[in-house]
Amino acid sequence: MIRKALILLGALWAAPAVGAVECSDIAYEGSRYTLCEVDAAQEQLQLFLRDDKDQIFGHFSNIEKSLAAAGKELIFATNAGMYHANRAPVGLYIEDGKQEMRLVPNAGPGNFGLLPNGVFCLRAGRADVFETLAFRDSGTSCSSATQSGPMLVIDGALHPRFLPDSTSYYIRNGVGTSSDGKRVVFAISRNAVTFHQFGSLFRDHLKLPNALYFDGNISRLHAPQINRSDAGFMMGPVVGVIADKP
Image (cartoon, rainbow, N blue to C red):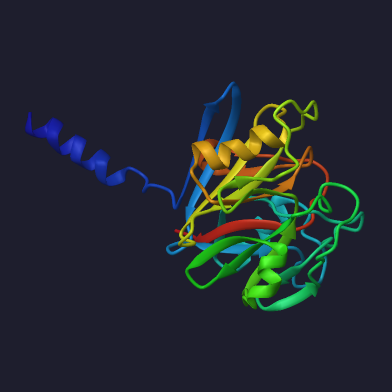
């Protein structure tokens, strides 16, 4: 009996620590999603676009290689905002205090221009989704930020142009944040969904007051804790959580 207890104790000591990012697959209102939740007060969220040679990362594997050289690892990542054909950001993009693209407040073509759109803003100990004009008028300073659109949830309300009977179905991904900026939930659909369905996930299931759409069919997820790291064509901006290599 003592030997069994020692073996069990040893196994517990050897068990891997709970990951800094909690990812899970869920079903909600007839659709399937993968959710990854981050405590922004505890974990290191970071944006990625170019390497130290000013080349677009484009793939999760390239980010991993760059981090490994610095003794870091990528424990979660997803695409984070719309981009042009050359992978340059369509709207505001700030990385570690350096601004590459200005804020775009006006309407335009495509989902990005379906106002209101928004900004995902990283600051010390928190992350927030802001509607673009509210962000502009607030004077908020972000250490890193990426603009995308449309907004999914705005102060607890769905985007006014989302229709319950929409026939526009795509794979979609996005992010929602709590009012205190600590709880950050990234979601990617595992089947095609409408904007109304996707926004409802953040508002009604996750109970998050603000959420922002990142993109559609190009949406990808890197989540080693659930044995997932999507490959494909090159991405533009990416958001991830990094940690020191054990």
